[in-house]
Length: 382
Image (cartoon, rainbow, N blue to C red; front, top):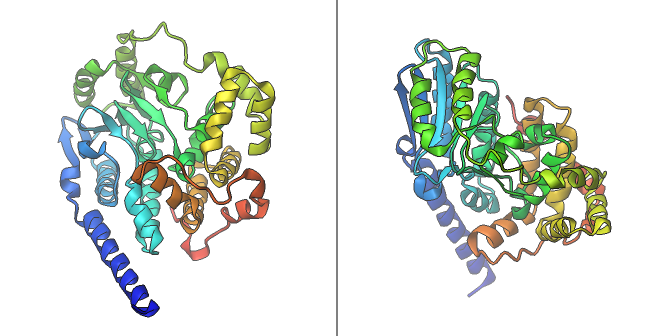
């Protein structure tokens, strides 16, 4: 068989595969994957892909965005509640595999997904009515974007929060560059680089959640919220506060990272990823050694992009951060590590990615800076 015929066959297979992806992404029943209803004086959104841990896809984004815009103008809606179905997850992330397949063949889905997701994140961050995210279960990536920028985030003992993107050749996006550097000390940078998992009440203690309520009380909390008549932000806060006061579970346990915060603040206070790793190695404590092992598994390029993302984001508005992060997504789509990370972690699950470049020292400052460059007319517009 000639090379030309082989190339044509490969191209045809790629096109057919992409058509299947887009068919799934665009024809999936967003109406059943996202349930929107008026309950009392509230608009309630339920992410309804429990088998996929409510992972966010483009049709879901395209359902939620206009619904939030509509409810913001609806005089009969006083607040919005968003939650996940199935009992395991609020939202475990975005539909990264579909984005990966699209990016490989240059399909616009790789732009559309991030652009529309970030526009939705901005709507949540600027919402005029009380917005309550019930993050009862796994909350990662895209699920963080649907919750963390809203006014109220209610964690339970089942909440598992993480931003593990450096392990798949990406960076903590969905506005991670905005909220992470605003956490206490160097905690946000630590979470961003290591993908460390916070559980239950620790999600509140870290500053990611605004409240902690025991999972068994969430149903009653939701009922009391939807029964509120024309509530102000403080009215909603009072209801959430009262449920938090009734939730004593794990109240006597210290923050999981409490004994390490001084170490984190000291060792992660460096101007480079190399400096952080040098600090950790020099410290030599069991905790520091564990972080060195963790960082050794992450994409070197992702870690460098993440450090600069958080440095810039610390003094930016949410809107400026989202524009910056959109630029970074497109740089990652053009690189190699994102596809390799998704392969290693989500597809083959061998957890042995071959990063390129493979070391921090091989990455030039210029190549990092290039990821932050304006996309001109293709920049995200909010």
